[in-house]
Length: 86
Image (cartoon, rainbow, N blue to C red):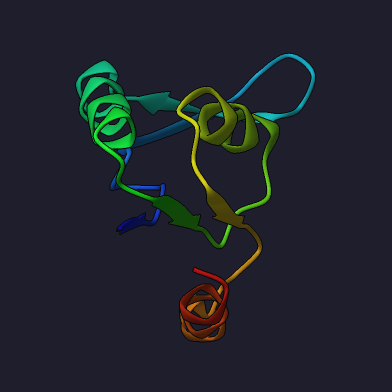
């Protein structure tokens, strides 16, 4: 299983606000290819992020993450929950 945060891990740490007032991130295409290959090889994938954002939700769905925890400023409880669910 691969468990990741988002900001600074799946992104290059840049963030901007679009004209609708929503935050957007720069995601790495290379990371996406590697994550897709892991998924195809049978690895389970999880995101634990402190953010709640449509761009993160869309990226997690596009990359077929099996588990998704958002709004987790303290990632410990979400990680413990993941261990029980996975």
